[in-house]
Image 1 (cartoon, one colour):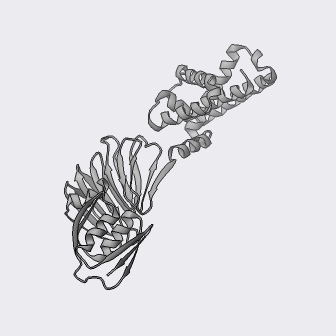
Image 2 (cartoon, rainbow, N blue to C red):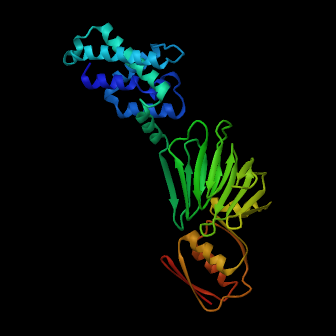
Length: 344
């Protein structure tokens, strides 16, 4: 056994997170050690030896008193000191003495950890950092995308929106952070609630489909439930349970909310490439078109004061929509790359 490999063996068996993984290889803990082994393939043999050693080792299910622990420490240090005298010729150490030394080190490490929880804290901190690694997906104006999360949940992310999510969900919950608008088709998992955090508002589900939309200027949030059931949590206000077809709108500045029914098609059609306008005034109309197609509008002339447009456009070109407007209003348009001119 080389010196480096010997150290790897000792380091592994002295790590509480490694020992815990050997006894219960599940969830994030299992993912971490599988990834570790992939990144340290050259140390696979020592890794497997350490795993087998921990599996074979049976420790008593009680802790030591402080004086007993100090006595154990002095004994381990004494044995370790004697063995270190022949460290340069480690392979010549009798097999039984090697295992005695390993067992003493492991026993000592675990006992100290149980009493003070300090010996292996640096390794635990490293594991935590690995577990909370997050990714992000962001769409500018004119772009929409579909993201599949680690649990299979499908997220339709709208334009000018950002979603942050962990590389791997932990064993207790699934949480994502949303800025903008997204439609969620959540994979059912009764043991791990799925939570969408939007500003100060949290929407929690087990498995369902719903739309969340936040305004980046006012921080107002709308949660619109299509199927299933969700719980909406707002700081300092009672939790709200929504049923399908029900929508909650939260006003951040007023710290107030309201619940009402909503038109499912009007709210969620965007994820299927459909724009729906219902009694939409001119300013709101061109603002939405600009974000949808990623263009800037310049308007000349006096716009109609009674402008209210109703329409449904499915995966249509911007030019086709503007051409249709010419039959309704006295307007001319010109498209120059990302700039659109309207003249009344």
